Length: 227
Image (cartoon, rainbow, N blue to C red; front, side):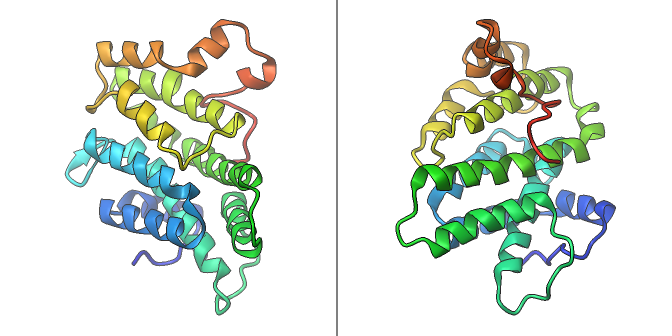
């Protein structure tokens, strides 16, 4: 079991995110899915992709992916911990953890949850965790191989942002199917696989056709999300 990080400073929490094992990531995300609604199954599926593609690997892989995904897992864990009745009150809860709590509480306290509202709350939490991780581990992105940087910068993060804006359901296997078809199956990404992913990226075409400024505000430097 991963220890709570509620009372760790930013640097200690950053180090903890990098240390989380693959089994711990899968266990925590599956636990959150089981206890707080099936929408979080999308995180489980994406971790499985990161493992199968070699981006998450106990003996190597990507430090950037390890750190960003690790912080998200810590946010899930801290939200679950804070929701337990016996938990000591925390004076200042990070925005991402609070948003995960908001989603979980809505799911728990509503007899018949409105799935669109629940999904919107879920994406708010996910995106806050994601972009906090992006800012926290910005220096690790710079040491990734060039094609992997391109995949992250021009394809993966903008795609996730656009998916969140459109409130795409995370429990219908749609994202999993798209990931299998479009994303590189190996780490680091190669030229051809990056080009294929770009040509299949909805965010690429949203920008290409001159999408509204609201939709254009996506990607690593997006100012839309709390960090």
